[in-house]
Length: 366
Length: 125
Image (cartoon, rainbow over all chains, first blue to last red; front, top):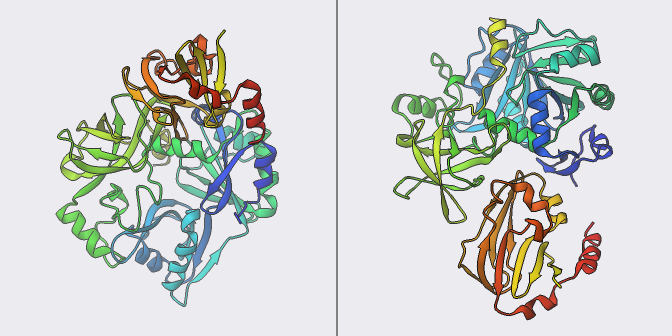
């Protein structure tokens, strides 16, 4: 039996094509199709139901040390209400999940974790929780993502919240801590994630969709949007086997810290280098390459594997990400991607494939 | 007079003498969603009934197109990869993916006609 978010009936009523994702029956796309939805997010504003994701919090003396034990990032200087992207590492230096961590107090942190990982994440957190730290799982809260250049206007016009001063990667509480707004997302556009109690989820979705700039967007476009940005997807680019150095998210690793899970391997990967690295791949010949396709050298030797792949609606090209031997992980390197026994010419490409529009927000905040 | 035939895998066939013009049905296009690429067969390729001879790629997935007959690919629709909207056209009006010279036109006898295919598709929903 598939699980349902509190917005589930809403998706059905909107005519969504539903499909299974991480044990949930989720909207893959609505009437207009994936490409139109993708383009709508890039040009206006899309609403995603991401209530299947996990929301949790830790609070109490030792919470900072707890977070710094479970992730390779530094949170000591993170201001209250600011958010960081990081990963939970396992003792072998692989990745348990990637997540957003917001500092809610000196000794308080809020997490948003992947739907497919939440059970193991929560078990892992509880296993490592000091007695002085309290753990809360907000399993009766909904999460809606509003993404696109019109998102700030929609927040004001549909909900009455002026978010113009809100820096990118920050959170704020409204309505007596019953409504949380985070400015961040998974599309490369400006946008917000809104957390409310389940009981208020459908009404919030309805209010947002009533705005002319907003259309509902399914998980298929969420995937093509994140792929254009080169964002990792758990289970694809990052797994319990991949270190953050291999996954090319070295920037989440604090160089001055040790003592977190997996430090030994991550430190070794940093100082000695890695044998494979995650890169962007762009097909230069016609075709579409998908996850699992072999990456081959110009001499037709297998040198890696594609972890995600598909069509980029923005570039109208075929793009993907994959692991290749480190000596081939340089921009412009010519490769082949093997699709159904046929080698399609490809090249290692810079990430993101499409410039992020969130950067200017970061500057504004600085 | 030419006639249209259909397979349970949603290939559509326009029969022109001993040549089968093969495309995919509107139902298949609807199920695939936004198309992004068509991989054509090589002209001269020998195919057997049931062989994968072309691939239609949508945003979501790659769908194999199977040959409805034994024969030889005599023409591939080279315009199609750059004009994917062609696939929605009638087979005889540019919607064909490839033309196959049949070695046994009798193999078409087991396929559905338009009315039977319509009924078949209605049974799927």
